[in-house]
Amino acid sequence: MLRFTIRRLISGVILLFVISTLAYLLLYLGAGNVGRRILGPQASDATVALKNQQLGLDQPIVERYLSWLGGAARGDFGSSWFTQQPVVEAITSRLAVTISLVIGATLVSAVIAIALGVWAARRRGWADRLVQVIAVLGFAIPGFLLAVALVNVFALKLHWFRPTGYVPLSTSFGGWATTVALPIIALSIGAVAAIAQQVRGSVIDGMRQDWVRTLRSRGLSENRVVLKHVLRNAGGPALAVLAVQFVGLLGGAVIVEQVFAIPGLGQVSVTATAQGDVPLVMGLVVAVGAIVVIVNLVIDLMQGFLNPKARVS
Image (cartoon, rainbow, N blue to C red; front, side, top):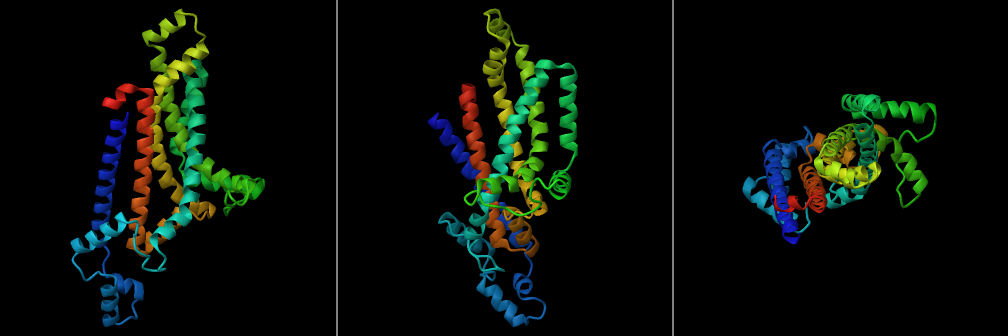
């Protein structure tokens, strides 16, 4: 198990290095005249040239990249070109908000999807068709459209939740729950559709296996066969889909946070990208890449626990 974990860690570090390198090259090659963009059209050419020199943009791109990489390895990603705020501070101050939304949506999606998938696989008939319809609707409805609908119905008309804003968990659990409930629901629908379909198919395939009939012949109840044995066998494919959905939820959170005015990474990402704030964008790329690597590592370890053959694959 230790060698399995080390292999996954090494592959994750290599992947993060490749992603950050490509992102750096693409961002700086397309950055244009950064000094002019920061200072505005009224600034003189000499002032713009001095600003570019202060930012180190007069150096070769390879030298700039190696300097950035050395700083990143020490945890120093520089400062924002526009706000002068350290990149690490700008990200960490909002990271917990986004992660709480994504983890909440992941847990809600997993619980509901597993329940729907197992129910559809066991009942078949109208229950199976109902889950299929729910899955199609979940895939078809965009997350931002669902977010807007939830705000209009449950916040503006029924006044059950706050339409915008965010209350930290450390301040009030009740306030936090009321501000993240609608965003989590909006994020969860699409993930529920994908995971429920995977669980349904895996459970149906598992229930057709010979070893399942053997368990039934030994007198085990249907609930025990399905929940303890078949569902564990279906856990591997479902976890793989869950990992993909987690990454998708990170992207979806950018839009959902804008709809609900939640101060997470979404607002920072949109602002930094629109301004062309390369140091901040690079910090976001590395942060999101690290989260993806960690999530994939956790999923791989869970799959290795459920299926020992995966450890040697």
